[in-house]
Length: 230
Image (cartoon, rainbow, N blue to C red; front, side, top):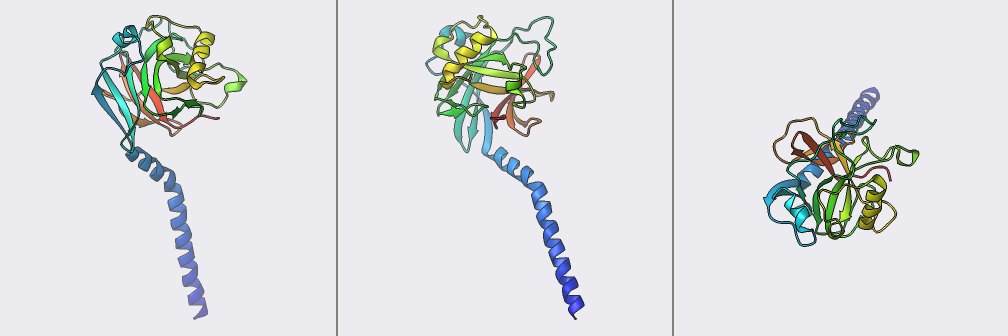
């Protein structure tokens, strides 16, 4: 009787532990699916809010997209319908968009509420231009992201020429105004190799949620949920 009791109890505990291990292994995927259910992306046609120059707005696609979390708008984006590409493309290590020249205007974003960037820096509600930036390849930035590609935010009121490009240092200084600190306000950018026709929620290699958006021959993956090494 005692042996049967302990054998049955052992099988019960083993099954319970096995169930726990199964749940633990599935937990990240379950959490990720719950986050995905809470995030949505939708296209719309409307002019950007006041704060951006007419010349910048004229360079953008009239169709924007917004990202919502739990039904609340996180951000509204307007990107250029085509991007100027450089030849030959850069082959720098860790750069996913070597076809783009640093400082190139990519688009515009409106944050209706305070937002935190990829480095968890505070960014006040407002309208910002998005320009392509490359993270320096130095020891101060190791482990931040798999790629060195970012979109740097600049207050739209002080960035009025869509054809202007900026050096890395100049762009970083201008972007620091958006975070009201010493570090540029940055939105991480990942290359996307899946073919898409409209903005789409996807996970990147770091298990972060991003919106994939095709512009010409490039597909940009804008990270909208998740932070790099802080």
